[in-house]
Image (tube, rainbow over all chains, first blue to last red):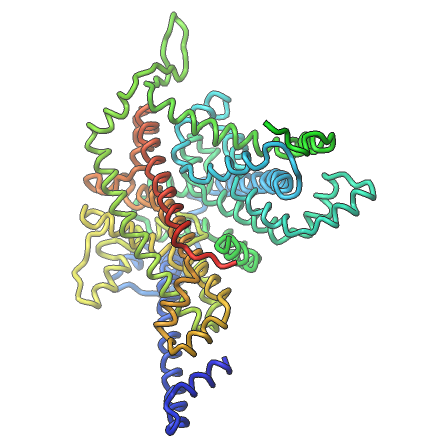
Length: 297
Length: 310
């Protein structure tokens, strides 16, 4: 910063150097003000729909349909949440979503860590061909696979079972790639000395590589959990039983039943979002690092 | 053919066996639920599939018979498919560049106003990480003609209430606005991370050469940011072609007069509402062809034009 400032002053006409520096300073401050104003405005636009959601969820229907709209409900009707919760089997929906998200996350972290390690640190026949093949699948739109996978799921007898919602989602090429990239940064000397001590690869992966790669593993776990929680189309297609609905699918049916009872709908939407919000607050750093890392190849 | 040197070592084969053991679960899942259905989609696109068919007194589920190119011919005749193709292209053609340009501007501002970054990150990620069904439900309420937030704000600008969800002309704009809002913050954060990894020396050099402000941005920031811009662009492009869930929730169907019918909606409709699996598979193949062609095109452009540091 300091260097650039001096350079900037030198570029300006010398006889009025001091004045020019002041002018730059004022212009800088003006720019800064504009920058912050724009950023605040954009942030407001980002957050407003969520505030509107929560605000509506605490109103009576009459209050929600008031025009011009009000922001602060008078009084806040927290009982809307209880009413929404009881209007549909949300307990079941939440159990399903949590169960599926946790199961797929455990499976995904384990399976992709094994695969990522093989690609990062082992030398084997067909490695490069296999890796390119896997990377190639990233170009396949998941929706293209919906019809053939539906037939497979039916054939396996997994239609309307938890298997259909868990097993296909415990290995993703993206996670394998991410972990491989991370594992590659671990020095080979660690393995050399572990091997001399008679350590197996599996134990080395579990006791040395995994602890060293906690940030990457956490990123994979987080992305998987969020992806599983938000999944909609797959669940919609592979099940048609109320007992197997997840939160998003349940929310959709709730919407179809409630029609225009916006306070209850918004209460339900808020409930669907809250677990993700809590997760984000606790793992904000992991989220940001993960997203930044994927963006930075 | 020369035999690679390492093939002679026993340890290489031991390691190969071990590696495939490590890879087995992943390959099994990806093989069954990605590779196999990928190939199967092509096969299905040339077949007529009956949910159940009686053959010689036996109930055969998913009975398949070859029909050649009939499914593709049916697609060509189906005006809905043409509509889906056009509407998806319009949607992608507007959403992707608009989001990218806004994200680039936003990242530039964020780079100057770093103090707001922690707060802004939260605001930017919220729409990106929350369930699309919940988001779309909220926007359905925001788009309400009489009581919605958007028409209320537009009223300040003197705009008459827009019938966002029932007027076919406003269907795509409604989906576009929702998704620009959803992705712009995320893209900006990725671009910002890229901007911050640019060495300050480049800017000092630019200043010495008399280029600062907007010119430095155009001649230093943008070229050095091309890997991230490209990444965001391609992710946005591929993601946008798959638009579906937002539409289903916003309009509880393909929109008024099918004005929100997209490629994926068409596949869903053919496959799981009409159970015409063959035709749905044919449409999937075309969706894949489009995405694949775009990826290839982008890849060749990248190799020539995109600047990679390191």
